Image 1 (cartoon, helix red, strand yellow):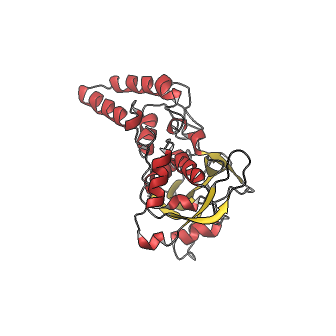
Image 2 (cartoon, one colour):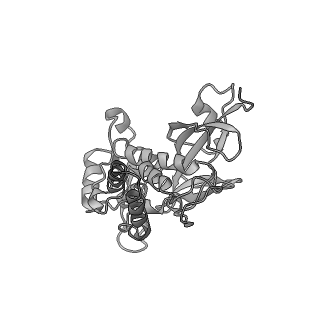
Image 3 (cartoon, one colour):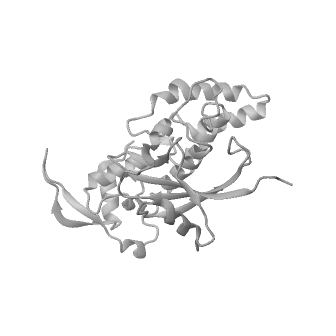
Length: 296
């Protein structure tokens, strides 16, 4: 019989957009915010909202993380991961906002394919794939690498965040916690506590998929915004450049936004129209999304 009790906690990947940078809230030791699920909480989400300390908007349960070796110590902790969105990156007493691209630098393709993919990641993954003990495993590994890290930007799948992270972890290119070491001594991205980077990867993949069929991006936008600000926000989350005119036509044709009648103040260039999200669209069409028309 085990001497250790199983502890249940809630982990939150709290996301905001700050100057077109998707950021997550992290506590000391690069740990995700966490809290207990108490008996007085009617639901898990109520438990999360009770200790989050922020006005959370959209909230969604991600996955239950319960592997036995999640922690360095012998404590068995079952974490129920959540994705939560907030509109403003307000200062927190015991936490800071961290760009999710600091932890996943290979995921930002807004300015093209990151150089580290060709210089570091693909050569190391090729060595890992060809170093398998049998031909079948070599083929399977090579296939996984080709799908996850396609060298053709048109074929880059922004939703495969977790698959890419798992490849890098299996091949020894990223560490699962500050106590673990990579096999080559070079760490790609900022390490997080325990397996929290894996939880963030799950959240990133979920959010990138979600913005394509539900208008959750508006949970991260101010009450009024320009169409350019909206496009830049979607690009920041997806890590991809979008075709400007196609994006605008899609957003307007789907009835996602309406003009407020106000304009931006011109600092440089001409003033731009301000828009607001049409919340009625949630009832009109449950699957309204942004479709992500790529720029390439």
